[in-house]
Length: 159
Image 1 (cartoon, rainbow, N blue to C red):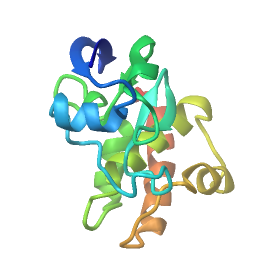
Image 2: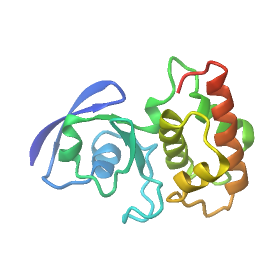
Image 3: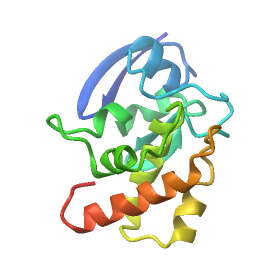
């Protein structure tokens, strides 16, 4: 077991976790941040996506110890003072979910894209979101949500 300090959603949190324990496991099982979902456990579905220093990563494949020197943002950290982020709001407005299981990973991946590419072409959105799987097949609404979020950000919404 090792003591770690993880900067999650702007707060330094202390956690005692075995060497090699995944960031996903620490978030969900030790810190009760359950918005990040366990999907495949192999980094293929995107349900566990979080931001690590602003870059989308699969938390099921990332050892928590590797994340100790980074700023981690989970789905819980996107909302600010009771206001959803533009990406969260756009997903809600477009009904870009059905069962909702993939939504947190989709929102995090879209947030990462829009931080680096504020006005992506449709092909860029598809390419960037390619690693996120929606078993309900709401891809057209997800695409519309990312486009809407891009427009909202362009009009002055924060990322």
